[in-house]
Structure formats: C-alpha cells, structure tokens
Amino acid sequence: MSAESTTAINRSIVDLLDFIDWSGVECLNHNTAHSLPNAIKQGYREDEGLYLESDADEQLLIYLPFTQVVKLHSIVVKGPEEEGCLIGPKTVKLFSNREHMGFSNVNDFPPSDTAVLTPDNLKGKPVVLKFVKFQNVRSLTIFIEDNQSGSEVTKVDKIALFGTTVETTDMKGLKKIEDNH
Amino acid sequence: MVLEATLICIDNSEWMRNGDYAPSRFQAQTEAANLICGAKTQLNPENTVGVMTMAGKGVRVLVTPTSDLGKILACMHGLEIGGELNLAAGIQVAQLALKHRQNKKQQQRIIVFVGSPIKHEKKVLEMIGRKLKKNSVALDIVNFGEDDEGNTEKLEALLAAVNNNDSSHLVHVPPGPNALSDVLLSTPIFTGDGEGGSGFAAAAAAAAASGASGYEFGVDPNLDPELALALRVSMEEERARQEAAAKRAAEEAAKKEKQGEQQSSSQDVTMTDQDSVPASEADDKKKTTKHDEGLLQEAIAMSSTPSYPSGRDTNMSEVAEDDPELALALQLSMQDGTKDAPSHSDMSQLLADQAFVSSILASLPGVDPEDPSVKDVLTSMQNQSEPQEKKDEDKASKEEEEK
Image (cartoon, rainbow over all chains, first blue to last red; front, side, top):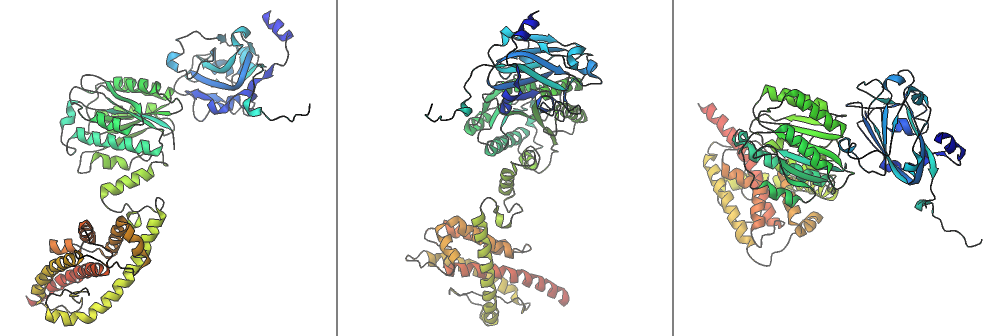
C-alpha cells in the first residue's frame, strides 16, 4: 500500500548511480578479483560475468558516500542468474550516514532499514525502503549479513539505488553567471 | 607510496635473552623494529607506526600509531624481558589499535616478531587470520629464534589465512652471523610490495655493508645524479693522471731504487718499478714501509704551513674544495679503481688505503686534500702498494726458485 502511494508521487525517482562519490567508496571482505565496481558501475553491473563476491566469509560491508544529499526510495539487489537463489544475499541491513563502519560495530546500532531478500528480489524486483528513514542521506552503508543458502561465499550481480536528490549545491557545479538576466 | 598505518608487535618473552642473534635476540629485534619505523616514515611522511609488546606482564601498546619517530625510538628503551608470548591476544589488540587510527584512509598493517614457541592452536590462529583478512589488515611475520617445526607450521597457516593478494609476508631468519636487521632489509617487509621502499633499503644496505651497494661509487645515480656524474668524471681524470704519473715513475724508478733514500719532494716518491724486482728488496720493502710513514709525516708537516695554495688543476677540484664530502668521495673513487688483493703489511695497506689516509688528512686542520702535493703523495703510496704486492709475489717465487 505504501508502495503504491510512493509510486504515485513518482516524481523524478532516478538511479542514484551518478551521485555516488567514487573516491570514498569502500568495500570490506570482498574478493579482490570480484570487487565492488562490478556490481555498481554502469555497464559492469549488466554484465553477468562480472559480479561482487565475498572473501573470507559470506558477509560484505559496502560503504557508498554521495556527492550530495539524497533521499533513498528503493534498492535493487540482483544475485547471479543460475545460482542466484542460493548464494545471493538474504539479509541486507542499511545504515545511513554512518562512516567507516566495521564488521565489529554493525550490531552496535540499529540499521536504518533491513531488507530480507526473496528470490524475486534477486531477479531484479526492487525493494522499497522506509522512505522516512532515508530523507537526508549523505552516505549509505550496506551490510550483507548472510546469503540464501548459508554458503561460504556470497555473490552479488548488481546493486542499484533509486531515489531523489535534495536541492544541495554541488560546489563543483558553481559557475559564475553572467549578469544579463 | 602507499599510505599505511603500521603496528609493530615485539616479542619480549624470556626466550629473548638468548644470544644466538648478536648481541641478544631482544636487541636484534629492537634494532630491526627501529629500522622498520624509519623505512615506513620515509616511504610516506603521513605513514604512522605504533609499537606494542606481546609478552611481559601482558599485551601492552607502548605507542599508538604516530609519525613521530622520536617517540617510537624512546619507548623502545626500558623494555623488560619476561613472560610468555601471547600471539593471539597480541594480534587482536594490534587490530583494535589500528581500527582506531586517526586517518581512516591509511591501509592497516601489523608486523609481528615471533621468537618463542606459540602456545595457541593452529585453528585459533587461522580464525584470527581470517578476521584480519575480512577487515583488510595486512600481516607481516618475522619468524626468528629456534627452528621450531610447530611454530613454522602455525605461522604458515596464519599467513595463508591472512594473505590477500600477496600483501602479507612471512620471513624466516635463521640464527647466524648476519644481524636480524640486515636480513630483513632484503625482504618484502622493507621493499614494500616491489616499489617504494627500495630507495631506503638500498641506502640502508649501503650503510650496513659499508661500501657501494651495487651502485658505482656508492652513490645512487637516481638520488644524486650530479654527484654520480662528478665522481665518474673525476675517476677518469684520475686514471689519466695516474697513467702519466706511472710513466714518469717508471723512468725515475731505477734511479731511485739504487739510491733508496728518503725524499721529501712533492714529486712521486720512490716509485718502485713493477718490473725490476731483485731479491734484495726485502730490505727495500721495509724501507718503503717506513718511507710511507715518513711521507705521511712530511705531507702533514707541509700541510700545516699556512698560506696553502689550492690546486686548480681540474674543474672537479674546484667543486670538491667547497665540499669536503665530495673530496672524500673522489678519493674513494680513485681507490675503487685500484683496489687489489690483500697485502702483507697492515701498515702499508692502511696507508695505501685512500679512504683512510684521506680521512686522516681531512680531519687535520689546515690540510686541503685537493692540494696537488698531497694528492701526489697519496697516489704514490697507492701505486706503491700495487708494486709492493707484486714484489712480494715475485719475491716468494724467487725464494722458491732458489730452494
């Protein structure tokens, strides 16, 4: 129900990929051969051969700062096609505006939202989030706690974030305007 | 130039009293730790290094990661030896200390010295290793002390668990004459992951080996291209000069040998010819030894007189005059070209040793090593050591013939 009302107000819900500040992106416990850009970057994430994979165990911690303040509406997490229902992520916790989290302090404070992914989600169906909790997001931490089958390794094919931007001044975009209006 | 926060874990257990690494295991460790601190801070000025102990009364962080080298060196003093190594707790505390580093952009690295038996199980170490990998902490292990099979196995398992893309290393240092720090200099712990630390390592190796570290003239052409060029040019000029001097000497040699008396001229003195070597020169050898000493005395006497004309024969000497270090380097470079097999007499060897003589001369007030007279004396003594050695060989062969 809430999903319908939000879709009604659908004004300019965009893919927030353009607003990710790549210089501050971090990912913990990922396999270096299968790293974060594979799951997020345009083009990479559509490619099935490129995915994000966890390393020492099945958890993953992803930190995404944004270049401006955004409101987060929904998120798509896609697992790999064939084995997606097995080793795609299950419990995903989202923390907004928390910097430099580590695996040891993920449980120290409550997440802004938790999503338990179904195989449908893993095929590409977006998970709508509690919009009210994500009104003022400067950075997002995604904690993938476990996967569908409890295997040692978690694979993520694609992560996409949807939402709107807030009117924040992008300092880089500031240009001197000619005084002729 | 990787930005890194390093934590060095020192093993100060009872086993460190052992003297199989000179002077004692503990001191060898401290030296190595100091060297590491210097290397890391040189690699990148924003690097921080911290120190902690793993044995003693308990695991204790002595210095939290800081770029202040003085603080790190100071805390190494007054460390006590005792207790048993607690590797697991040590690594975990190190990880915690790194987690709370000020600059979160730094990569995390732990360097552990292990010189005593590890009481933990392999599984425990593997779990710790995995946790480190998960939090992207690199681990370098220095395994010294007894060749303990159990230890090696456990440490290798730990390394396998931690290692992510070859960023972690395990180094075994067997007991022996080489200092712990020297052995470590050539390992990836110092050389970073290929790039970066090689400059420092090369310089330190040069200092340790007290000689050219593979570079000509002992100067890295990358670090100081002008100095390297200057040395090369001066070496060539010296060679040319020495050849001319040798020719001159060959002419005067026969005459002077017969005379066999001391000369105080600034010319090449008593240039004993390589070729004509009669057996009776056993006495001459002694004389020339004393001769060298006399020459030195005379040179010193001459140089202590004031109003010293400075030699301007080459452009190099002009430059070198201003820079005593360059002068010394020039002397060294001359010596490099003519270094030979060891000779009998220590004294003559010492005097023939350019570096030694020039260092003596340089330390004397009023002596200008660039003065041509002094230089000639030096070259004569040095040329003398060559023919002297040949002389000795010939003498020995002649004695055998006579038998």
